[in-house]
Length: 223
Image (tube, rainbow, N blue to C red; front, top):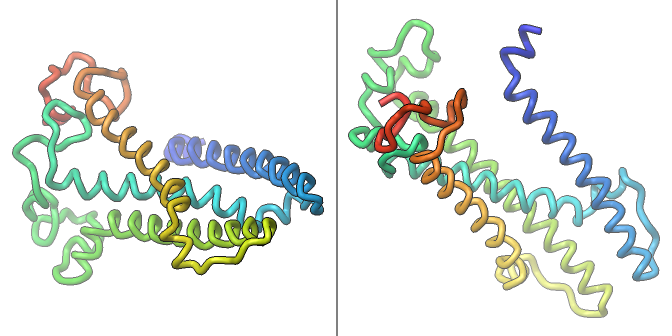
């Protein structure tokens, strides 16, 4: 029970992720098989569907936009500020901040990560690890989306007796960017709305909100 209490947030979202992914896979298989039968082709099993370009594209298409959202938000909040928003640093803290504020090198406490106490590449890597990993996930999922989408596109081309296109031709195609940008714009809208709404709206007990009685112009719950 202690493990559950200490990891409740990760377990909650991890469980919902698996349930949603499983639901997507079953619904996607039914939709895919309906199209297969429409074109006089054999339906596929659920397990086989998991390895199709159709499923891979649907999953990666959403993942890459989510990781792009986090990457840009992490990067932007280093320097950009929003007065009154709980998603912003205090107005005087723009930038990468001092070693003392970040508790690195000689200012690192005894229980700090080992690489926070050193200088050079290891400290740089630890200092930027969150952005690097999120950006890496974004690039990897974007590549998977492009490859699976390319395969699905060429399957569709073949079904209609049309020539296949190269990967480069696919990723410069309007259809690819229409599908990609419709995800990106929704993610940027969601982040922007969250930034602005936390100026005026509250949720008691949530760390994503300022204290209920905090003034609207207070930039964070801790400034």
